[in-house]
Image (cartoon, rainbow, N blue to C red; front, side, top):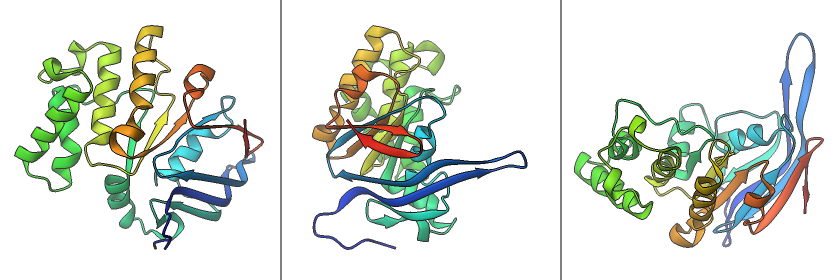
Length: 231
């Protein structure tokens, strides 16, 4: 299942193909796509709506299967992982940040952030302490006991970033993370996201329409006709 390498890449895709099948048509979204992301590197992928950006992130996060090619994330061969193995891979290796924060409305910010660690077997005390520390790093220490409805859009997204980091993932996948934010909050989230590699040592992959957001990445690609072109 694992790729042996002294200089392990966070992500390696070779010849990745993904097709969505329906009675009306077969839509080939990814066509022999290649991608490499080093550990600690930030990468942005741009492209039109429907170009396959979200599909690529879903594949890398173990949320979507693929037909052909090789995909390694944090040394794990995703094509070889069973349905039973995938949740463990997601919990251990990947943090997700989406356009919508998906915080549970009946849980406080602290509880939302701590929950993934608690579900992975971390004691409640340790999970809550780690969640509090992460919220402090996000500038939310005074908002830990507030519910999502009591937080601003930017605060909710920062809490979602803290939640993505709670299990110390090797890679963070962010899909249009500033898409619902005003300019000021988008800039705050952009700055925070691109500080993660130096702060935690993780790799960061962002899918975005925003050229300003993408410009902060170490490498930028455009996804077009199912393939990546480096800018």
